[in-house]
Length: 251
Image (cartoon, rainbow, N blue to C red):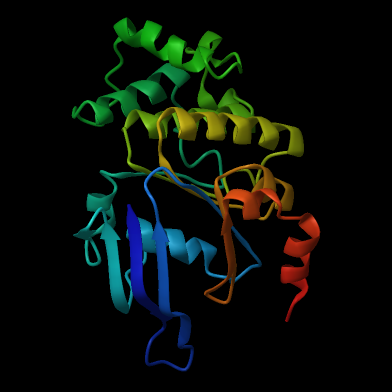
């Protein structure tokens, strides 16, 4: 599904502040994998998913989607295949619009219509059915402004809106970081449910060691643009918090 080949990323090139983050970096992610990426600040986690989304263009190397070279493709073009949920729950939804209006906007985008609000109450049953599956009571709040929702409700709404575009790839950029532990747990459970139900290729960045161990089918630890370990299957299942913590402590 995704292949990064011989990637090099250099920020502020040819200046006194030049910084090379990736150097001959390679990574392959299979179709349907749910990859968790963990690491300390500056490890390159966000840069990695920005490389995939097109938000960062590599200095050297190639980005391949399903055998198709998208290395120099603009972010808005790649967005046809990619959905992204950010750390701030407010980014994925419009504060001064209701739940219905937000869902309608996502629905219209997925249907190939314009991005105007375009509310059609005939879609209410469809919206309620989707929201009801989440078990958060959002189906009862179609007329509520998203600014009045809890962080967890709003972040889950962002997930649903992202899925309406029928993406092939889901990028989760620390989407639980702004939530309290109990709400984060709920959002993670809903995230895993959505990823499995839609058989998505998903990449989730997190600083949560417990979350990195419990969720996903593959775990990658990064430092300074380098993959320190990459485990899946039985190796991931047997991964301990102590081992992950020891990686953070290594200089």
